[in-house]
Length: 76
Image (cartoon, rainbow, N blue to C red; front, side, top):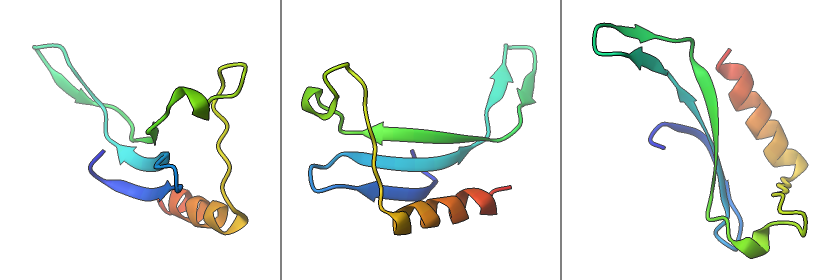
């Protein structure tokens, strides 16, 4: 992801980042822009990062949650 607006990584190199994306449809005849979206990317996931049910649980500190919320609100 090139234009990350927020990124955090833990000591195990498990990364979480957020990017604003501008998707479009290109069917060969026309290229039409769609409304902007927020894309969440989780990188570096390994089997031991998953719960026994196969889920991925992410936790961030209260301070990081505030930073993320501010970044997301600034995109609106």
